[in-house]
Image 1 (cartoon, helix red, strand yellow):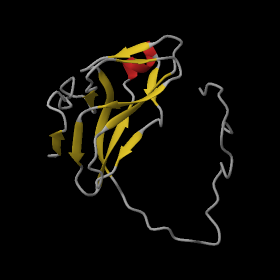
Image 2 (cartoon, helix red, strand yellow):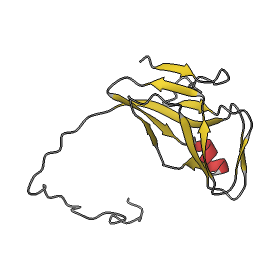
Image 3 (tube, helix red, strand yellow):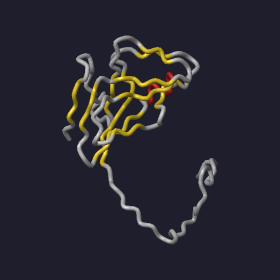
Image 4 (spheres, helix red, strand yellow):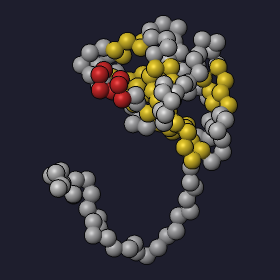
Amino acid sequence: MNVKITKLKSTALIPEYQTEQAAAFDFHACLDEPIVLQPLERAMIPTGLAVEIPEGFEMQIRARSGLSIKHGIAMVNGVGTIDADYRGELNILAINLSNEPFTIEHGTRVAQSMVTPVERVEWVEVESLSETARGSGGFGSTGIDKQS
């Protein structure tokens, strides 16, 4: 799949896959000076890039697992969605969930991303839904015990 990308700043880095079979590619911070993300602080980390996602697709922005487990850096909104009609700069919505400040420098790989198909739905209003064994049980209704 070809996806159009443009550098909004000459120092921006094009995202890249880190291994041959990686499912996601990494976005880099595009900064004039480092950002120190304090504990529980949120920030929009610029990438210096804009993209044109093909119609019928979305780009999902996700936390990098290494930054999350080693430094507590996560996405403010869990998983970000870039819609096919968005043409602005891609910013990474980061939060520091650790107890230590974390410095983000120009070129730091701050998020991973993938482009995925989007299925449009048509809502069909009905009087009732089919029955299941689970029914309306949710939020822990299946427990946490190990299953054999």
